[in-house]
Image (cartoon, rainbow over all chains, first blue to last red; front, side, top):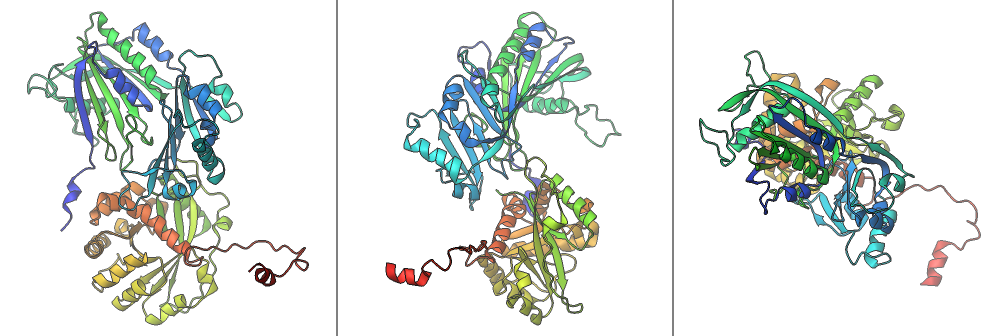
Length: 362
Length: 268
């Protein structure tokens, strides 16, 4: 009598690929760069008590991000802003405290595209052309508007530019709190802080926490075997589940008195005396993650006890895009994250996971 | 996808408990709630009072968790009808009824359910969840209601309070789903205390138990509620297209200007 779909969880995808970090066609940096907005980066190094100095300095160098309150969207479309920040280096902007399945959201990608994800009422009042959202169902309630700011046809005083400015300034002024970050490729000019000094702009540092885990059970992995062999190594799915348990501080011992979790570390596993876990929370840009990834790869340039280490990056649950420009939605959960497992011989596994209203990651 | 809304918060309570209900609803993530004033015709004749304006009741509305906007509060009237003569109130142009944002009707017999779905000017038809349905749903009135843009409301708080009512809630909901195929459903609480409120994603999961699909269940708490609120707004306008707003009168230059009818003749 009860419907059969009760037993099924909402759809989720896990894509795993394997390569070598120093291979000329390795795409690890490209994958990191494609995922624009990251809110949390964590890495776990087994058999490590003290972090090497180079890694520590890379973390300290992560840089600030900025929070601007009540910034009208038409300020991001003016040519002063485009020439000062979008064309010189990579500028990232994401609206703060807006839910992707309920409110309007805005995001600026480093390739100069401004993405507005608006609900039906706002779309009809705004007057800019967009397309219906893929996750909206038969009665379309959400539209995605993409404006290319670096387009040749978007010159000052061109029809396109005037229309966009008129829509965002007079027809339906949109205003959000924005999280901003800018990766400067060495050009001179003003900084975000000085440009938005009239709005209430705050510079914020990412929050960094270190912890050392004792007597941790770690699965045994073989770098050339993604599926794992029973009795010899664990598969990527088992590693993914275990890593999620460790990063969320779920205890792995399956005590009979615990009602929260009966999860156990997958077999075969070894007990590691100590492991180093670092978590960085904030608005972190991909360029810094690539630097951190390189430093973690060079961790294995000297002989170390650990066989592998992991780097996990979580994206924002409410961002309108996940990888490149594929649309991201929030159904019951908005996870879009990726995880690198780097082995001693610099082989790596890359796992990318998305939730229900998402495209398959590239 | 619209913001989440809970269209049934009983209003017969004192101000402090209403305020705590509102705070809990905003904390759980609801962007809009409707304060429900229930009229039962079985008791002695009651006058329909003017709705209390939310801005008078609550000087400062709480901010919805996770956004920077304040929660929206609407007014709603529910009429419990058990006799066809009770419906006359809706047909009369009583000024006070027009002032409510949403109007709902709770039919007790099959004939009244048919009348509510086909002719009455309401936004929501409440479905009884506390006792076994005295009548079966039939396809023609339900389909007519869907065409007219009327939504069927299911409550979930009785299911939290009592296990017998839980059975009736699920069985009544499933029999409704078999007829309406999951369209035009709104799920709301009738929570009298903050503890009886549940978060919107939890209510959407509850919709799965009633037989809705995942998308329909989430719509029952968001998109359909928005549509019901807009349906109520069209009652204040002409055919949903023309709104009238009272403007302050301009007294000067009235006598010297040419009367409008004369102007039109000269221009034509």
